[in-house]
Image (cartoon, rainbow, N blue to C red; front, side, top):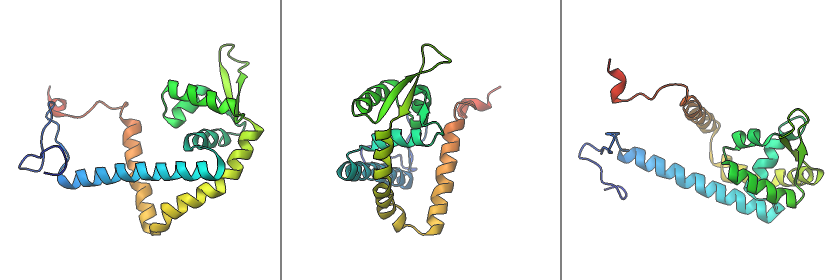
Length: 180
């Protein structure tokens, strides 16, 4: 047995919906990916906090804002870019606003709407944090890979992202998809 769920003799087990479970190789790859993702995020967060006082979540918000010409976004745009729940974004922006990293600006086109705006303190914070952050990313992620492996990682990541982004556009294929 590989992990807490037994596999069928064929190497696969079905769920209630008859979906095949991961075979042993897929399960090892998936768990390695999850462990890597968790460790990389934890390391980046720890290093950012030690070096700059920013959390990884702070850094992600600041990157989204600095990637726009006006250094401001509507909250729904930030939510979409970060893939965060509305509640998480709202609470995090409140904390960042208290620290002076971002501010709220009314939207003149929409009386009810607002922009999240990068402050000068926020710009200084990300400018100071970026070199160290890039160094940690390079040291713990890219320095262990060849150029070919980096290219392969980009292709695999892009393929998976395309599937995720197009998941809502196409009906799910499954056992019933061939019925007339």
